[in-house]
Image (tube, rainbow, N blue to C red; front, side, top):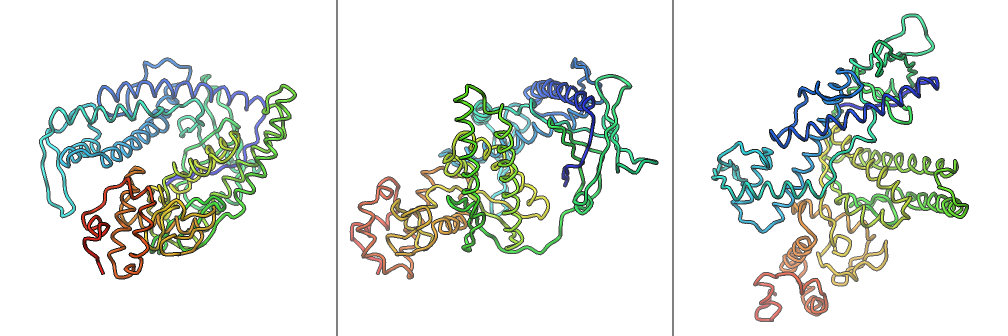
Length: 493
């Protein structure tokens, strides 16, 4: 696995101007290459890192173009298509299509045969490892194509307008100084002008050396002039066991199913920054100026983004250190976006989406790569209203943001701890891909199953009166045994 680590790179104004110009050309070239790759994809069904792109007219050299295609454009587009695959799978699994059609569609999706047919038959291996072969009919191919195009239409394709420069030794050569000792490394950076490279000094810091790993030939240069060197890090072999569920709280940043609250001051600190930024915005608007013209506004925005990034990483590191879990269970990040981020003003919401949500995804991916921890996302619908003890779901169960009391079994606990325990249960149900209605149906089914157990037989006298007033139980189908009990035709005890 690879990690980009920021290093010190003091440069002159002339060099910074030249780098900014090269970056502008780099982004334009990346977009041209991306357009050509999409043309290849719709024609052949796949992208190619080694496609011939000499015909693309741009000021940068062929070395730049091949580097952009190989290291930036194609990996980005392949990652996008991998997300499309996941969404395709979600749509198929949550549909009411026949089982045979689902299996064929999932087979076509796994082989990326949405547009170009390659297989005549679909091979399916069930849970018992029995092999099944299905003939792929024309209607199933058309349906796969339709679902794929629907996803592409509803999603924005990757844009390369704001990317950083990622360069290999063909364009940015790392060199050790032979005599000078003021700097640890020099980078020979090619520009848009032939035989006119610029040399960038690099000063390494203590963290760079402590991080370990092997220095690669890759260099990353951002728009703000920050320079990062890429290291290859080996996976840490640490004994992990068990699993832990984490819920994004309304008062604490993360809450575990074991009752620990992480980031208790996170939202109060964010709101503190939000109030200051909001005051500056109003003042600048009163003067008829843009907020970005204020240095204090920009400084506060920067501090907020840095605080969010640092706190996200600190909390997740603490979770790993404390529990050492083999598997992390979290609510779908779309739930975090809807329930938590939308409570903040627009300017703060933008920061939380860009840095908070982005940093969570990035850090969890690092955790998966570095430690081999499995990260599972589950549907969060009704997890804050369902009792983690008996399974009864009712909107009145959650009294406040932090208080939860089940109206059926009277269990009292922290609302977010209760929600995280529900997430852990749902991971065991494999409730990863279901919509809100299906999540509610499954929750009701689990509750009914619990009622037929010896542990909850004392609740029958109370439950019949509660569900008659509960709208959740009116809108979901119930098993025959439940209907008989409800009509009092039979009694389980």
